[in-house]
Length: 299
Image (cartoon, rainbow, N blue to C red; front, side, top):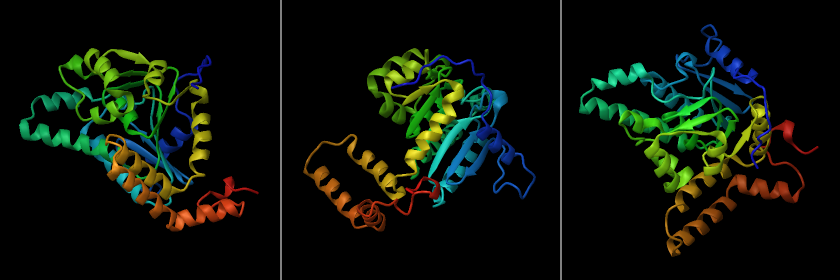
């Protein structure tokens, strides 16, 4: 059930966001990777990826798209990272495309437009197919491509103040690159309404149609995410990756003999894996599996 208690909290960055921003602004050598438009802070096995253009409500431009793609790929290769939380600095999660960037695009030819669109599509695909669980922490505005980011993440939690819109039609455009993920999240019926009207809707409506999984007062949002991360870290990382692949395999195809055989082959393979054997042995031995962080292990 969604949490919808009243809250007087203001849209100020949490301690976690502030720490990630500080890492971004640190002197050379103190931050592992320097970015202009995002910040990345790793807390034990959880990576906080902060969209960090607060003056423009974290709107996309070519640099942010490239940096976010690069950061996500790097995190995906890091076996020590168990989950990724995507969030925004300042008053908003992400307001979609940057106006100055859109002015630039107005002068693009066909080849430049296609290259630009492909870069955005690649970033969204990278987020959607990340092998780690991904969580969107949404507050303020999540418009256009920003709402698309929410749909790309595995799990989305929103503050009560969050506002959503697939706003492209107001500009004579279409939400093309985000459409596969949005339609998967909310279904074609709701996509018809919100793609065609480009109207704004509340966090409560986003919860109702399936775009977000839960709603919190802003001052309880991080606590809710932290509690959920505790559950995520109890599960096997290979099992989580394989579960995401399983969902992609079964979501749209018919339940035929080919699919049934595929699912049987998948579970047989996982049972024989090192992680599968460790998980069963830990369960039978009434102990925590090796992948569980020490702070969460059974005493």
